[in-house]
Length: 102
Image 1: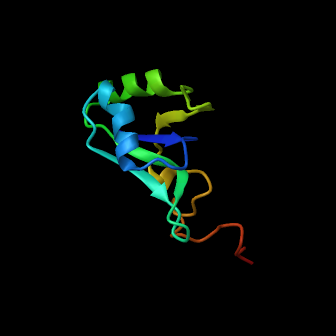
Image 2: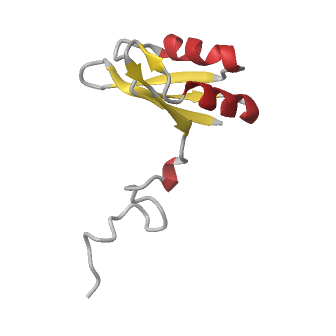
Image 3: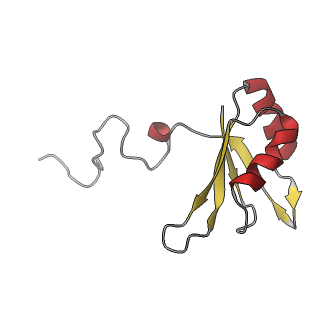
């Protein structure tokens, strides 16, 4: 299961994210999303845990946890093609409101 994690410290690296989830089960990958221009954390990332029950336990234990004065958000990640605001669902990547048919 892929887990979305947000609102953590901007100094965090992949290893920090992995260490946060490791006590709750096996962590396949942990990736902090980085800003392309500043090479700093964007404050969110993704954790991949192969065991869904361990992932759900981690989500329950860590969502709204207080880390260094910040409450982090931890939830199951939505598949990219189903995210709101994405124009990839069923219309070939075109914004359906931009080009109206006559």
